Image (tube, rainbow, N blue to C red; front, side, top):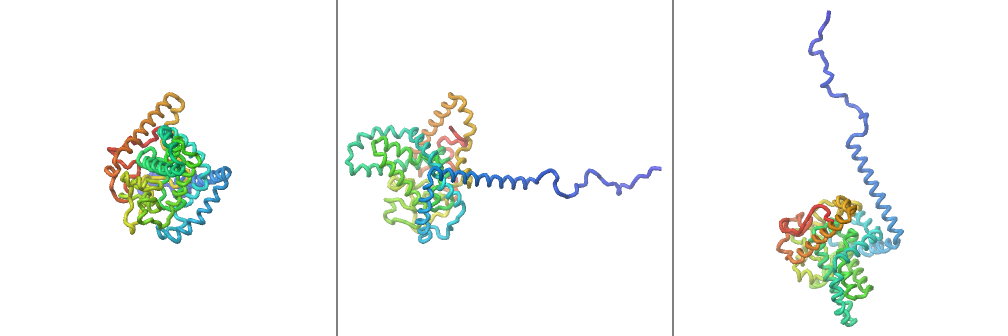
Length: 379
């Protein structure tokens, strides 16, 4: 006789959850993610250490000026701080120190960028036209005229680096630090040669001495490091005549009324002439630095971030005709953007919003009026 078990005694073999226990088929998803993140951090550290080693082999003397600047500037930042309470070991200071130590390696790519930009910018053409006028200058006036020309051209190339979307991709790396001090001035992309290349080639083509032009370029670099320092320095009534850390800190400020100002390397007269001078009352200090767009925080990411989208263009190199067409089209768009931003009054189109505004993301222009802006690499 067959006995049927009551319904309450039947045990389902499909609906009951499996017993809890260790996974037998590999690590959990979060464990795999942790391992991947650790491996990524190790790889970044190894690449950074390798870059520092190569830079030391290229020019081991780079460590001396970095240490010297540390000994001279850091005590001044502590005695006369512009932003009180900022620690020496502030966030991401290691990234900026790495940029400083590998500068000999980055300079190799930077020099190549300067040569390319200087040639393609065509600034050497008007330089040749100025050569007869330069030859007529008395020797005493030559360095003075060279300084004013170098600073004037530096104003415009710096302004283009901010207002032309393609150039801003590279210059944004320099503006990404959210803490300003002397070492933050070293965070600069090697392809950001637009800031110095056109002026350098113009002066050379105009007949100015190579040594004099090199001294002016070196002076701009030294002043740039000083202007980034966290020191409380103002010239009072000279603020409109000579740049200082206060002037340049407002240039880096990510605040609505400060964005798009103070482009001049040394003489604020250019900003006053073209409507981009900004120096608020003496009791006001910038509260926000950096940019709004998401930026990497490590060395490798910052160096590769401006090149996002370039991989899709690499295939064109296999077809010379397509590559030339793409280059010509990109240069035409780039020069068109430069021409557009050079003719437009900055104040009339700058976005005015609160701290954290989007003005620094690509261009200082409104979306509907902006020069050709594409989110991908255009060349």
